[in-house]
Length: 247
Ligand code: PGA
Image (tube, helix red, strand yellow):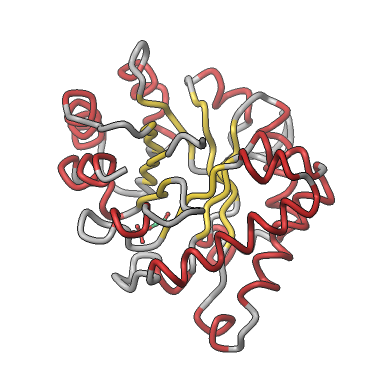
């Protein structure tokens, strides 16, 4: 049985006061049976890591450098994230891939660094609207997964979390139907099973893209959906907690 994970991706929102208020409310609230994680902006990680210390709410970062240390201005290493108390780090979010040009190779290198430091990468995969309409959803998702498998091996995904996030559903209010999401989640698990049945059975595959308290239960009821990566709805404690409670 896979334990569900509900992770909040705060992106570049809020300020220190709103971030700490959100964490206070999440800590005080009913989080149901799910494992809960928050991924604040990097500059707030140290502060929020301190607030979460000793609680069962995990800390995650939104990205990690593909190098260990050195002259990489503006980057943050996996070891630094560990020092802030991070357990998770998002890699390959579609906003990084599309707005900042991160290639499959770069995403895989970031993934490798996270693993090496003992962080759990949350690897995001997903197709654009154009790709869905062209009928190439599966080949796009397969390509994104294969890049990581080639670099880090099939086993590596057993130490990771995968997030299927159809790009057309992120921040748009257009949510994938439970059937559409399950179809891709099932495909991801089958593809992993062809490499390693144990890894496939154990890896958690989150859905992301306009998940909210109104649609979460139906999505989370699908056989291969093991939680959610929540953007907009993770910024309101009541909504985020309601999603966690629907696990
Ligand atoms: P959304 O974002 O919930 O606002 O659609 C999800 C994500 O980008 O991880």
